[in-house]
Length: 75
Image (cartoon, rainbow, N blue to C red):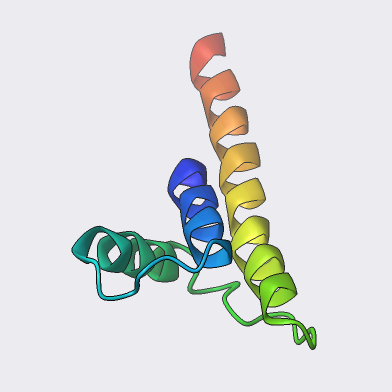
């Protein structure tokens, strides 16, 4: 999940062609995964909103995944 969100941040910041099917699939998946944090911040710069909104979701998924993996490993 975090990889997909990071991929979208890179795609968005590089101004990829939004009409491309792969770009649309990654964007749709990232929007769904980061629905709770998308547009959470209201920075003036668009790139800062993208990095903060999707980056926050990626960090939360990384921490949650690490925590869950540690718990499962201890069993």
